[in-house]
Image (cartoon, rainbow, N blue to C red; front, side):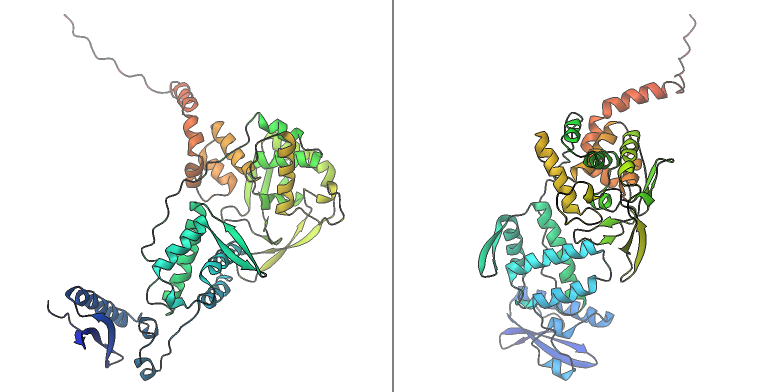
Length: 427
């Protein structure tokens, strides 16, 4: 096999030559001179020439140990994986919501516990990524304050989310010249079976409400189930957001796990108007007797634009002071404290345990079973479109097919034209 253009033999191994900044340079590849390697080297040389032509070539990233770097005044950008994470997270802070940033921090921290923050970025291979993925699935050991602890394995869905974050990290490294190629290239997602929603049934719901010893707790979970608000949105709900006469509720803020108020999770969820059905209105009227005239708070809300905040006046709907047995309560509930009221009520009612987020799934499932339009449900829940509703709650939509057919038969028969009968031949 002939040598491709720019590929030559050098002491039994292959070497490339190409023009960089008007100068012919040579770089040894250190691989044996075989027909297969000649072909691969030719493809590499072609990609290098194209990158130089388009202005996307990074000499330090492609050849970090090359003596030619000094000739062109370029320095190898060798960096540790921990150093890269620090740079990436610092820059991400300006473009993502705080909840997303906290997720990125948690993911990179757990991955660093496996790889080691001091590992050189150039040493991270596809094989290493696959090892990390396996350990995330099966569990791994970490050292914390001199003690060895075990991190339990995660679901395939969670591990795939981890890999998505790491893909973004390594893509950042490639685009900024720290790596020539991402080690994530060719890493396929794990097969996953997403957990189905596990809503409260109509028989279980009265038992849950009866197990709440305080009227505020009864109202809180009734409103959660009948509106589909997220836990953080429940924490930030204020009377200034509610119009009992119109029967509407506007979602303007959400509380993060870190205790900071931000805009709701998605753009579609911000300032969305939730139309209240009768049970939700009744629960809010009951709650108004306890907290409508409570203290007004001036709350800082972090906006999506980096560094921007606005102060909103909030008379919180749910006050921990009404139910707390200690003096350490604040002016509003935290996500964890709301979750605890759910867990206690579920246990007291003798119901199978589910996370409090299932109150949101309950709203969606009940609405679909009642025949509500998926687009309307998506709008009420703060989704950009109905795609999420179809993906997550498709089972409940299928179960409603019989009722839908009966409804269509009844409605359409009222105005559907009769089929014309053919003329009979006259004998």
